[in-house]
Image (cartoon, rainbow, N blue to C red):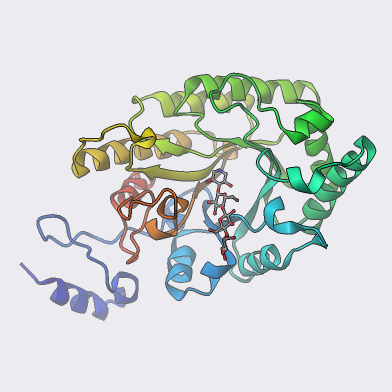
Length: 357
Ligand code: G3I
């Protein structure tokens, strides 16, 4: 049995050490596990991840991101919460991420133009005419600025009610209509950028089949209303305890529109939400996670090539995940493809296995 050091020293001669250095690439029995191939090289579609400007200065993050991914979604700095300030628009961060993408030949995906959870304060108290003007101006300005730089936009984010029963009510729907505000958003985005793929994006679509159904009925309704919906985004923050088949079924149902599909924010927490007692062993959680991630990756892979927009993970390393920040963090969750060390996680290996066929 060679020692871990000998193995890494041996691999140094092959020039792979920089990638593996500091990796505990060993299985439980101490046997060295092969490194995983670069995900972007084995995927026949763009592999995405999210980023914030602070990560661009982290050499370890950049090395992993550039090795495995060829598309970036700004995690929050391209949203209204960052861009729209009382003094006007602020683009320094999203411009920096756009420059990073261009410098490294990466695609960029924008999220999000209209989201129930942002903008209420900035639009409060406006007359109907001023509300419409500001709404249109925001989309025209932001989507117009990144015309030719983004491959696509999440134009409308999380429109379906949390429980899947109908649509959310919020400041956008109140001022401009439940469906009409979405049609308007897509029309304004199309005017600003004739090429970008315009997505409607939501979460728990696989985890909660009723919500998935409501979402797909909304897509149908928007298309019938003439909204230029060009893509379907499923965030896929997976609940790893759902039944086998739910994920595949949703992806197949979503494919019926013939539109590109974006797995837009994939992560797979090992934690059980809702505070229910959790007696699962770690190995049980990991096998549930890898089973569901394989089902998702293989279902996406099975789509027609023109419907595979991108498979985007919501972060590079476990410690980059929103799920490892307060109030979610338990210090142990492993929801992404790479450990803090850069070593692939069980989820990373599962994705690589599914992509390798
Ligand atoms: O980095 C700043 C820090 O400097 C500052 O001190 C701190 C307090 O103001 O804010 C920090 O920025 C926060 C950022 O996350 C980085 O942690 C922002 O306030 C916070 O709003 C932002 O939250 C993001 C959230 O969307 C809201 O935009 C999360 O990163 C991001 O992971 C999350 O992503 C969402 C998707 O857009 C939609 N689907 C769900 C997903 C997870 O919630």
